[in-house]
Image (cartoon, rainbow, N blue to C red; front, side, top):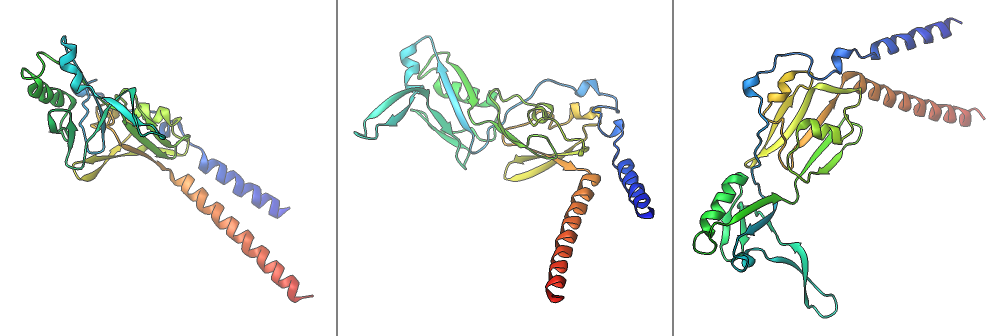
Length: 256
């Protein structure tokens, strides 16, 4: 009887200690929003390994055609080139350069989309195309979310404009045991990885420099202490049961 009462008491303590209050999980609870820092503007900075889709338009279709090469595949039997409606993409190499038709090497790594468009316009006009219209998008824009979320994984973003809230939504939101006050964003800047801390409980998230994510950003959600302790306890219990079972088996064999 005393053993049952003791077990019930321990279970009650565990249940109480595992309770989570609203202040631990509700987003944007405190801190005034600095309106002068809130902006819907974001910028994409091209980086090595970005796959760029570049479209050049002009009133003179023939003049623009050499700069819009189609992707080409080769037949398995006769090695003949087969045209594809898919447009050619350009990979930024480790030096930050792409090899563009006619213009040759162009350094686009480390600059924004707007700067890249201006660079191309300068190279094309007026020698090749008069008043070209240029569109550039990243074909392999992706972000990764892992840690204490419902659906961790890597997500391809078609429109490049994704906030940390969008990323968390794609991952199915944080689990109840995820730390909302210590979400980490890992970003590649130059040749190094930079870590940013985001507190989702605070309104300051909306003015964070990583509110809008960049390609290949990684969002990590840390487990809270209760989740970590639970995992450790479960491992310890499993190990105890395994060792106990082994000892019982050994004792049984020795006492036969």
